[in-house]
Image (cartoon, rainbow, N blue to C red; front, side, top):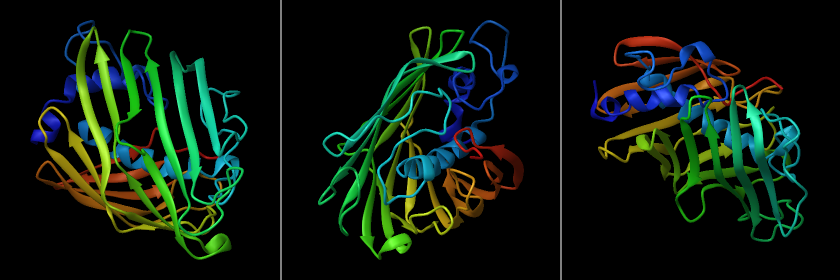
Length: 283
């Protein structure tokens, strides 16, 4: 087991009761039902789903990155983004339900540069995403997702026009921390070590390639470095439906081949398995 993985197994027991897409039968609280094995590699792959869904979220109900973000496609129906105020929209989770868990806190999107009324105005403008929410499971575990950098996740318009706009996706720090019974079990920060290119505003034309997403275990300082290649969206899904992410995770080769909306094949070293991304859904 790699240095990146070995400290996370107990943490992810709590994670499974918190994630929007995990099945209840896969989860249990620490110390209640004996030893539980959790697939750490799958959880590492979930970070890829989060990035793809977060980029799409900046486009609102249609996924188009050139317009103001309004509406919602995720759980907690009725708790969508509010109206644009001072180039900012905010989604407030007021204790709404995610399966058997509850969600509180906010996700904020802010348009910068020459943007007006939450609409990109010119190359150089950006959309910044800042999560600050907590999911509390029915057995007392909590997952806190927070912006740890100055900006959070950022899409910057670099060139092109219309649906052919190009963007750089960067992140200076998004932290996921899982606690249970007052103890922190899982503490990982994701950021980009080099910008990831995104072309196309619409799902029908959007492709990600290049750059590097880095996952850092804040307990051991071990890292995963993963890059996308021809990661491509299509209408009807908030995440890409084809393409690959590949790199190195804790000293092992790590590759995710996207096979459909929210599905992929994960290969770590010589072992392969199916993955279902928690944040990716048909809509």
